[in-house]
Length: 210
Image (cartoon, rainbow, N blue to C red):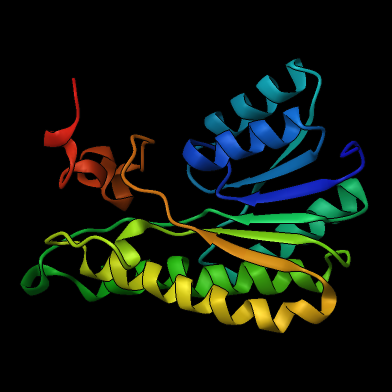
């Protein structure tokens, strides 16, 4: 039975994160999701989960902000009393060719996609019950595909893959498992400041059916 278990999904207001939250709620988990730019999506997700008989909470937390990450973990535990699962899905997608890529975009990508992932895992496992589960959402660009303009994004996802492989050894004594999922391209609506949905799919969209 999962009726007492709690899952926190960083970047859970839409796309993959929202789908994970909805599925976990359907399986009986009490869920919390973080959002940064679309409160309407977060609130709609919470409403859909509660309307279906689940339990959900939305938390405003920017994964580029260490204090916000910690506050999200604390808010989840204060609300539900425990933490069993953490899903780290928050990320940014800023694409561009080498000669045009800005330092601001480089810093923003690494701040969320690498630093933010590490800090989210760190904050969660410090308060997670023994036997907990951590899932990070990576990308197949880390090791299996290459596309012009995606070097920084791919680098960030490769860093996460390496990070998780080694964190698994750190967490084993606590019986906490950590795994990295590497999905391929999908339509899920990155917002404009993070590259936009069209930019998200531009290397692949010509291969999709209408």
